[in-house]
Image 1 (tube, helix red, strand yellow):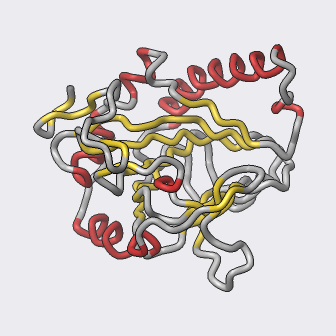
Image 2 (spheres, helix red, strand yellow):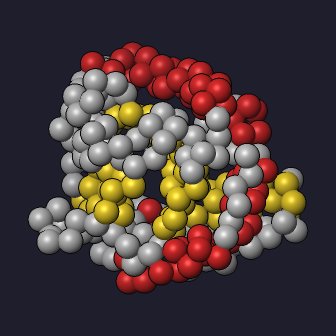
Amino acid sequence: MVPEITDRHHQQMEADGFTIFEGVFSADEMRALDCVLETFFENHRKKLKAQGGTDFINRADEILFTYGIAEQDERVAAFIKRPEFVALSTAFLGPNTDLYWNQTVYKMPEGQKEFPWHQDDGYIRVEPSPYLTLWLAIEDADEQNGCIRVLPGSHKRGLLPHSESPIGLVCYDNEAPDQGIPVPLRQGSLACFWSLTVHKSGPNRSKGVRKGYVIQYSAEGLRHYGQADPIEGKLAVARSGAAV
């Protein structure tokens, strides 16, 4: 279902750096997508085991990322170009948009590990910035199983200094008085936020795997910071406001 993108959504993105679109996809659509993504998850896990790596599925405190799926699977490539994503990406980025990045984020059950406060721009600096992150709940995401949290208005601070941690980059202290707000999502719903919005996700203390699919879009012609040439190989999503 193509979401209605209202003035309120634009105002929230401007003021808070994030907004929510409820019920964009049906349970059946999420189950079909999950079947495809699960195959990539299992293949990734098998490769890790063959290489002598951690068996993530049996480590309750681990988080597993599987990236570049749309570039490898025609079904997922078609999914990230659906009218819902054309509408959302062009509404916030302009008429010409590309897929910047996509990855699953699976949190194993009964864990304690959270993903720390960060900005997506902190990993690879690009321009124009910010680009758009859409966090899709393949199943319900809540505080019990590790939904994301955001710091409203943090996108206005620009790119913050990031430091290394055992699990990822960090730009904000977990002990700071302001720990933002949770963003629970029902299955098939989307959290939409800027790549400069500071966010994290909590541990999955439930008995099931928390499954999210992160899809990021940029304006056409995205470049690495300070470089003139566009980044090559990005999947075109929309041109002149219409699907490619």
